[in-house]
Length: 224
Image: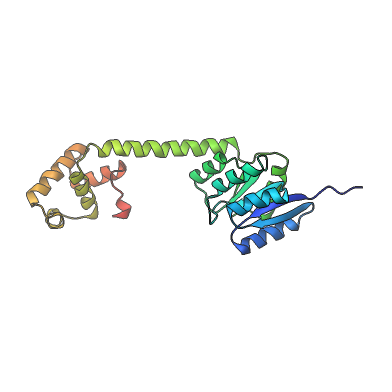
């Protein structure tokens, strides 16, 4: 009985140790063959075409370009080759960038050898391993972040630059005298600004002003 042809995999990884580990994992599986190792996006495009790779397993961060940019370059040579990203990044932005570049799968560095092998085999069969639900959740989270930033800008527009500065100093725990010395303005001017801040926030004390400003995202008390 004729043996099926080995699945040709190109590994794109600029860290030699990781490239070696991934290669051993794949080569240890039946009917899988690593036909090349590339360390840059430019090398990946050339190697993918030269070696007629059936699947490309690529680091998301490469020394000459981002993974998504490298994916675009690879697809210019082999439009239909499935690309699996292997990444230390777990952000929504990274996932969406991977999807935009036409990636088939997005694995984190925590992925096991079995998960990598399964992704390679399934990708070779034309399966897309990024669930629509995961994509939708990432979009929703990014939209929520965008809305929060837009709301923060709207709120900030209601305060002068000096008032926002006063708010940050209040969050540091500075009193009127200390703020006067820090900013080089009179104490009564400080109190005048504080009064306006309290009024705009609809509170009754400096502490309440700090709490309200933190809740609204006007200041970050953790970094003060």
